[in-house]
Each structure stands twice: as C-alpha cells, then as structure tokens.
Amino acid sequence: MKLITAIVRPDKLDELIGALADNRARGLTVTDIRGFGRQFGQLAAGAGLSRVTLLHKIRLDIVALDDDVEALVEAIAKHARTETIGDGKIWVTPVDGALRVRTGERDRAAI
Image (cartoon, rainbow, N blue to C red; front, side):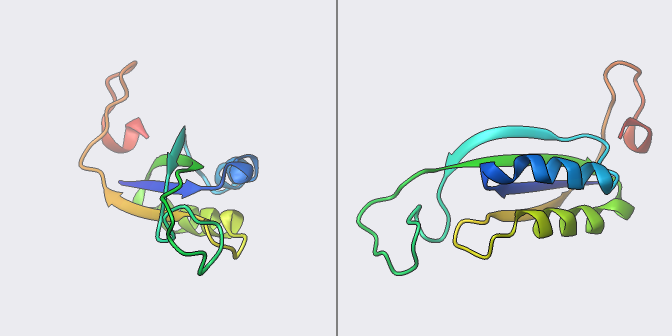
C-alpha cells in the first residue's frame, strides 16, 4: 500500500475527482491548504522575491494498493497539468498498515 499525496490547483478538483474514480481510487481525502513552492508564491517566472505569498491549493490524499499507484499518479499529473507555474507536486510514500474502523478489517481489505 502507498499514500499518494498531491498538491494541485483548486480549479482542477472536479476534473481530478472524476479521473481518480475512473482509475480505481477507492477513496480520497481533500483538504484546502495554503502554501508556496519553488517560486515562493510568485505567479510569474523571474518576478523577483519581494515577499513570500501563500497561494490557495488543494491537497489530495489517497491510500492505494501498489498495483493502482502508477495509474493514479499518472491520472493526477495529466488532469492537474496546465503547463504553468504552480501546477503542484505529487509524492508517494509507503503505508505500513491500515484499519477500517467500522469493521476491523486490516490492510488490503481495509482499502
């Protein structure tokens, strides 16, 4: 199991939800966040750093089975991409275990 975390533009959320459902995402968590990346929140390349600006973004967290990870990452990348600064980041981290609270199911059965 892996945790896929993606930081994306808010206006891409609806498109991403559809794409993730089509690619076997079994659930996701969406969080409104603010932050900055390599450009410190500046919206244009070479704008110079006068101050850091926190931009509104969306964080998606998806726990996925190993076999589904690559397709989900590719779907996020494809549907989040605008080819401009601020499209976001995706990272994948290992998940050692999962538990479905309602049923007590663990790991693969809990996903």
